Length: 110
Image (cartoon, rainbow, N blue to C red; front, side, top):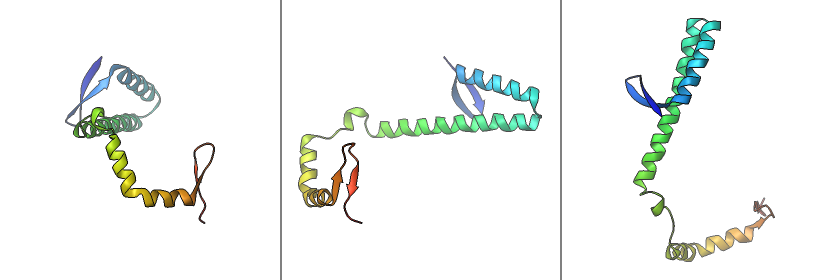
């Protein structure tokens, strides 16, 4: 399902469908444009895929550090403690805001 291609001394997993689209786009550009434009377009596509790959790796690392979805929730006692510690702030916020039917908060203060 995945092919690895050496890119800028890194090995990046590429989906075969994405690779096929890049090859098709590259062939079309090569037929119609100069090699400089072709190289620029290919580098732009590679940079975009590397950016997405980096974002996915960062998100995965953050999820791993956080312990995974089983640890992302709040307990009832944590919610009660939050409410108790912030009750004055929450009441002041509610006094200064209205709630529309579509759940948008409207500030009464100008």
